[in-house]
Length: 292
Image (cartoon, rainbow, N blue to C red; front, side, top):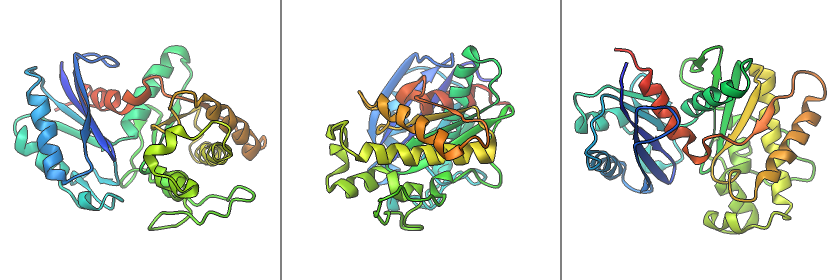
């Protein structure tokens, strides 16, 4: 197994990179590399940034926005048009030809890292779902000792959802309209409020949009509980983890209990232990467990 790894979290707007030999901490870390541009240029800067650390490592873990074809190492039908059908692993291999590279979605490794953290405080935990809400909405699952993939990986952000009473918004997903991504992604929220997505952090806590947001989080959590019998539902992404937004989690927990209505165990909804580093920590954890 690798002793020291480079970790890459590829987000819809920015990327982060780090180097570590211990899950949960970094010897070196850089955030804020723009991904809102030509993907070849973005990968070039990410690779240059890693090389400029002047630290040695023997594997690379990548957690990327999706959808991702894990067998081919491609980003596929992403809402980010420039990145569609982009050969991600192939491009990284050009910069690091002799180093093994692991790839997963930006949420599966996050679910894994949060599972490891939760295991320290709850030895009985078996299944953890991790939801990120940002440019897109994605859900990762760590259950029964492994990350869940199936033929690809879960695309839970595109499940159909029952509208909150009185919610007439039609949704913004180009594939499904009012799927969960179409209802609560940063684009959806900004369209609902007629503002730019960068203005979302300034929306007051008292605004009713946060009650709507919490309801849809709860519906996803309930569906994950029905489908996967999860113990914890961790909510990441900049919208839910913003300063002073903890009340959203409390509202979502209440709604989730109402939606499940005594049918199955209600998962504990919480914020990520590793906050906005969950994907970066998860990618490192996957790379550190890599076996030739």
